[in-house]
Length: 140
Image 1 (cartoon, rainbow, N blue to C red):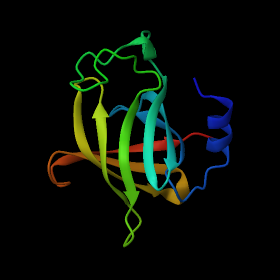
Image 2: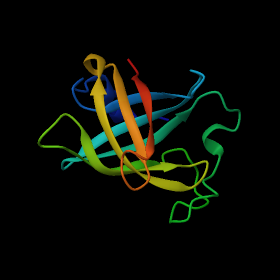
Image 3: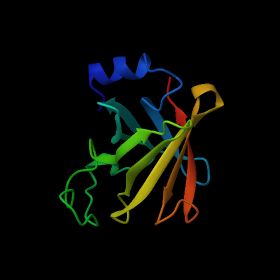
Image 4: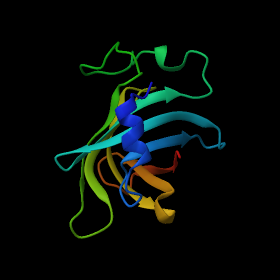
């Protein structure tokens, strides 16, 4: 659940940055979850804040995780970490993203598109050519 401070931060987020609340949709267009992305000291991080379309929702645990998140509830779990603004471009680079279904962590980069309404998030293995891009939608 979003706290009051997170809601205020999301509502006042600068549309040119990834800071805010984002809706993840799957390949069929169905909503999966809400992610709250924040920035502290230049680092972008993101946590799962709400599950959409699953009866077990965020009560699920990351049983496939191999790090300290193993067995922890998905609600509030940080799944994005370490992203920083590329000084030479419009991307946020150098981060990691967790797939809680598999427990795998991938390289991550992202960029805000469509006037701040969408976020292109790329998870990749090794180099960014070996990956997949999802488009997330900013919540209002």
